[in-house]
Image 1: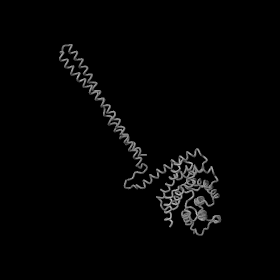
Image 2: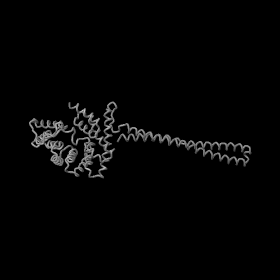
Image 3: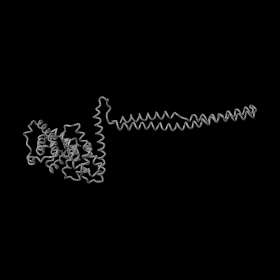
Image 4: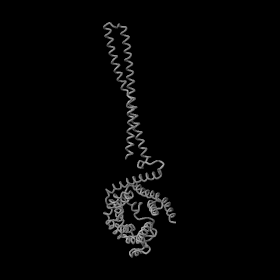
Length: 387
């Protein structure tokens, strides 16, 4: 805010100086002087006539004086015409100068907005990380574009309030933009439209957790238990329920919950590393060997599922459901929103290149978009990371 105040003040001062300077170039003073001289010459002509009548001057002297005065009057006429021309030119020049001054200030501001970085803090040039600044500026621009698309989808849903997939996509988009409160409203609407859908329940429960500083509260726990009843293998439901137990101090229950999650997960599940870290940390706090714990009978009954595609259900990045939901938008807006979500995921992976789960999500996203070339590149990277 202070930057814009300074910029505005500088523009006003510079433009004012230009206007003040050209305002002093006036042609009006010459016109006033000419009127005064003409009045004097007229009085002199009258005085000549009176001197002739009194006999002070003869006809020859009077004629010579009259001729000289008339010559001066004619000269005044030429000077007046020149002064009027000068005044007109000065007025035009003054207007042009003012317009140029304002135009230059406006052009400089537009150029700064295009090339500058008004959102970045003021730091010495030698201490700046230019690449990081460019990346941050790109993220802000993409976030702005995605925010506009999300707002368009929100406006469309006012006319289609029963579009569950649309509300789900809007909620995920808001989560990607870190607009958790807006995401909560959108996902609550989807939940109210279909309270028995496990995918919808999970999304709504996760939004509740995120807006409550990652605390798994009673309402979220109730929703997660319902989702787990509908889908016993659901990894997010199991993970958050175990996290809720840990937050309440029930470390043994949390340890058992995460061990059960590993037991019902595919061997290639990308969340296994994160869950394994939680198990190790909890076992250390309890001073127990996690190897002594076995999956619960219910988890053993479920067993491991068939091998899954490398993706995380409900993870950031567009899913097939997102693509289908976006079909309610215009073709251009749909493409921009989905690609914006994918690009934000790709940008995050540049900063955290060791995030194997993230690369798998990106691979799935490119496959959903049909971008085979990029998918092949990401797949090669995943293979190099897992060898």
